[in-house]
Amino acid sequence: MKWVEGPGARREWGARSRVSRTTQCCRVDRLGSGDTLDRMDDAPGIEVAVWHSEEFIKDWVDKAGGRESRHGPRLRLMAQLLPFDSESRFTFLDLGAGTGAAASVILDLYPLSTAILTDYSRQMMLAGEIELRRFAGRFRYVELDMSADRWPEQIPTIVDAVVTSMCIHHLPDPRKQGLFKEVHDRLAPGGWYLNYDVVNTPDPVVSAAWERVGARNPTENDDDAPHTALEQAGHDDHLRNITALDPQIGFLRSAGFEGIDVYWKCLDSVIYGGRRPRL
Image 1: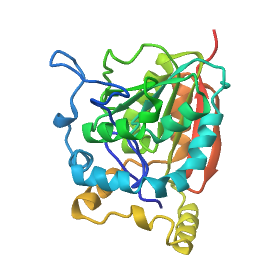
Image 2: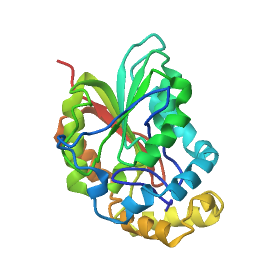
Image 3: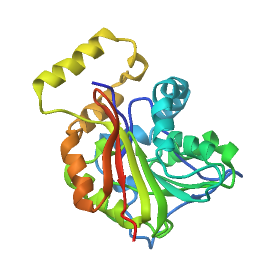
Image 4: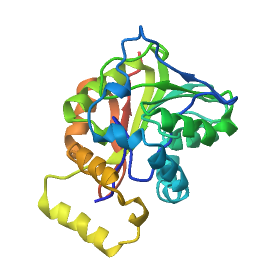
């Protein structure tokens, strides 16, 4: 199994993107005291401490090159699955975006697109502003805790596409199901949702095969392994929410998506998704 990462929704111990605040390239929409969205400061769990740690975020950003070599081809495939071309003008939402790894690939591939990235770690969003500065004027960050079912008004009620990358596995299944329905309802008719993530299996034979491959490729995730007590605690805390693939496909169906498929799979890593039906 891979080391997997992040906060109330995130990725592997080595693949994220987040944040924005005050740079000339973009802005971060912060929630005021009157907003209903829960702030991450109030969220329980060790992961909050991990993803709000300046030291951890710095280490995360420093290892971005290794994550890009591993996740880059999969993120490019996810971007290519979107039904747009180089002349398309559209707005997409990247939930649990981290420093913007997935969004940057889409912004590159579709030069007229604009992105709204969400995260609940201010440190990660600030790092993301720096990472995405070459896309100045084409993106903004909004603070969002995906573990809650309340969306800030800074996120449009309708977007053309939604992506998630290595973050859905941090949510318990009831919240995964609820989020998929919320995503469906915010998509324009014909709009796509795609998720790149890790899954589990209830089959011990399959699990043993996955572990066998991991044991034979020991260096693949060495840099992502937790090195401190805080990282290990966060890692252990979120593993419990990595679940099997089939139920998640069922959540998409129950949310109302069509064209549902597992568009790519390698052991415990998958890209799945579907679109909201056209009118």
